[in-house]
Length: 89
Image 1 (cartoon, one colour):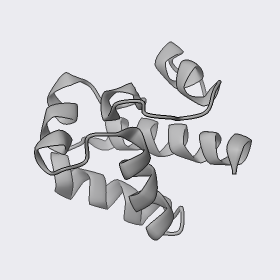
Image 2: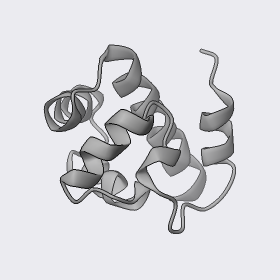
Image 3: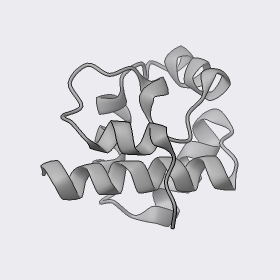
């Protein structure tokens, strides 16, 4: 699977205070929807990812329900968080 530059940039370093829009698969529109629901930082979305025990189906369904992410967007975001966790947790 090939990854975007955004994905590679995200997983290359600790998350810190990165905004939710820094996650692969989350652009301006989805980022705004997530922010409106209080999910303004990447680490808040990571928290949900961990609550769902890194389960791809559950996380992607949650992302679709929460902000309307399509299949590619949710897959990209999941892959980004999974790879980040593999590197930093």
